[in-house]
Length: 113
Length: 398
Image (cartoon, rainbow over all chains, first blue to last red; front, side, top):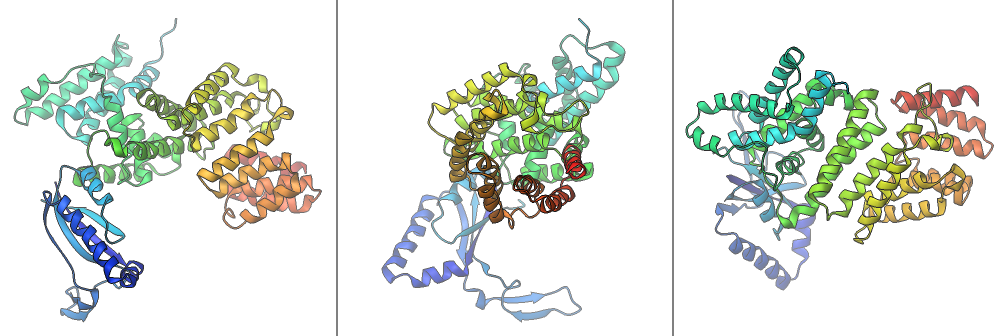
C-alpha cells in the first residue's frame, strides 16, 4: 500500500528551529537524516518544499484563471515536505511516523493506486 | 423447560456469534462489508425460517451454513475459490481469537470515536443500525452513514485486520476500553429508551468479559469489567415500583445482588495486585465502596475522597471533580463542597448534574430559593426521563 506523508510545520516549530544554536540545529537535522536512512527501504520518493512565501497559486474555478502570490490557504500550519512510502498497511505507516524526529504534525494519506 | 421464542433465540445467537461469524467470513472473502452482509442475509433467512421450521439444534451452525453458502455464491465469481474454501472451518480455530482482531480493527485510532462505537456494536455485537440509533438517540441514517464511511476508510487506507504490534497493544487496548466505557455510560445514564439502554449495558459487559478472557493480564480490562458488573449488581435498587429513579441514599440495598458484588470485588482485587492502577480500576473501587456499605450511613467517604484524588491525578476531569465534591460534602461539609463546585461552574455550565448537586448543597445550607433555581436549570439540561422525574419531584415538594 502506498501512502504520502505530508509534513506540516507550525509557526512555533519554525521559531524554535531558528532559535537553536548552529550545532543544535545540525544535530536536529542529523536525526532526520538518521530516520530517513532507517526507513530508506520503504521510501519511494519525496522532497522538502521551499518556504510558503515562494508559493504561487492559480485559481481555475472562475471565468478566467487567477494567479496569486502565496499558498492557497494562509494558515499557521503549512505543508513543508512530503514522502511517498510503500508499506503493508496503515499500522506500519503509523509505527514509522511515530518516531519522526522533525516537524510536529504529519498527515498520512493513502494514494489512489 | 420452555423454549425461547425464535426472535429471542435469534437475538441471543446473533449477539454471541455474529462477530465470530463475520470474522470467519472475512477470512473467506477478504472483505469486511461483504462478510457482514452475508451474516445479515443469514439473519434475515433465520427470521423467515425459524418461526416456520422451529429453532435448529445448533442455531450458530445454522447461521454459519447459510452465510457460508451465500459466501460461496460470492466466491464463485472469483478465481481460486476452492482453495480458499478448503481453509474454511466451523467452529473457527480459537487462537488468536478472530473477534479480538475484529474489535481492534473497529476501534482503530484512525477512525472517529463515534464510528468506532457504531462499528463495534454493528460488527462485534451484531446490533442493527436502528438499534444503535435508538441507544444513542441519533437517526438510523446517521449511524448507517458513520458505518459506511468507516468501512470505506478501513478499505481505502488499509487499516489492517490483525492484532496490534506488541509495542502498541496497551494504547490500542485503551482505545477499545474507551469504546466499551462509552457504551456503559450511554446505557447506564442513558438518554435513549429503556430496552435499548439495557441492551447496551449487556453488550458492554459482554465485550469487557471477552476482552478480559483474551487479555487476562491487563488490569484495566479487569477494572472496567468489575466496574460494569458492580453497576449492574446494584441495578435492582435503582428504580422504584413506579419506575422512577431512586437516589443512592434511599435505595433498598437488599435488592442489590450481593453475590455479584462480591465476585466483582474479587475480580478487582486480583487486578489491583498487578500494581498498575488506572482510571477504570479506581472508578470500580469507588463504586465498590458504595456497593459494600451495608447502609448509606456506613459509606466510607474518606476512602472515596482518597480514590477520587488518585483518579484526578491519573485522569484530570471536571466531571470527576464534581463527583469528588459530592463525597467531600460528607467529609468536609456542604460549604466546602459548594466552594469546590463554584470552581467548576464554568467548565460544567451545561452539565445537569452540576446544577442538581448545587441544588442539594444549597438546600443543606438553608438556601431554598437558590436551590430551586439550580434544580430548574438542571431540569432544562437533562434528557433522561428518569432523572427529569426526580428533578420534577424536587421542584414540586421543596
